[in-house]
Image 1: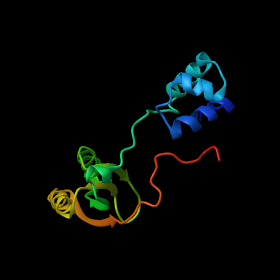
Image 2: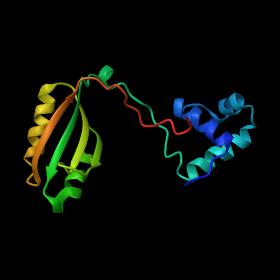
Image 3: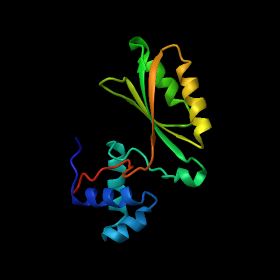
Length: 151
């Protein structure tokens, strides 16, 4: 666990909201020198607290109208192989190795029902996939990468 001071927490709150802020903008907002802010951001990156900054896309605006949660039972010895294959699928947003009745859960996005149907049928052709259950997500009530750890 990485120890954070008050300035680290303020920096993280800012970059969680908008990771495109420059060091100069952050230093102005926090009334600290750009050198101090740059060093702190580099330390947060080096320690792995900040893994990366990425754009968050609105997939509906790009024509991806269906989000699905797909639960998969896999032949035990081949779970990692199936997870690796799923990770390379362009429509797959997330792959989770889970406990319980199913072995793998994925979140995937599709333009339409036909695209989802083709994906599921292709998935079920994999000899290590025993069965799957597909749930269409009507609405994402909360869908974010980060949680409010600084409450």
